Image 1 (cartoon, rainbow, N blue to C red):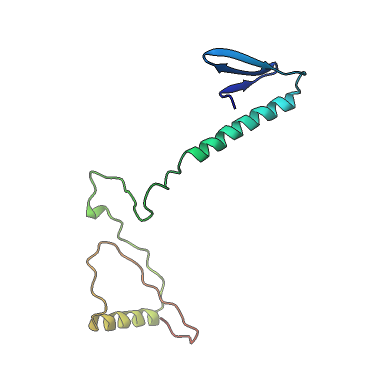
Image 2 (cartoon, rainbow, N blue to C red; image 1 turned 180 degrees about the vertical axis):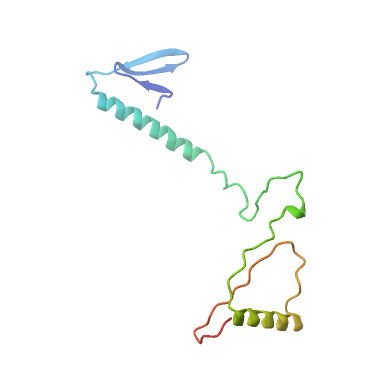
Length: 130
C-alpha cells in the first residue's frame, strides 16, 4: 500500500519522493465505489494503528494504581459519613449484643479509621440473622 493517498473522481493521488502522482481510473467510477474505497482505506489505517499501539493499561502491573496528588488534602476532607441502614429495634439490639461479644472475645477492636462502613445482617434460611 502506498500511503498517504486520496481517492477522488479522477483517480487515486499520492506523493512518492515529494512528487505528486495520479493513478487514473480506467473507467469513469461510480460515486458509491469511490466512497467505499475511502471508507475501506480509513478503516484499514485505523485497524493497523490499533495493532501497532499498545493499549494504555497493558504496560502497567494490574495491581498498581496511580492516584493524583492533591496539595491541600487533609484527613478531615475524607467523607466519613455513611447513610444508616434501617433496622428494627430487635435487630439493632442483636447487632449491639453481637458487636459487644466480638469485642469481649478480642476478635474485633474499636476502629480508629476516619472511614465508616454500615454493618448489615442477612437472614439465613432458618430465619436467624447472621
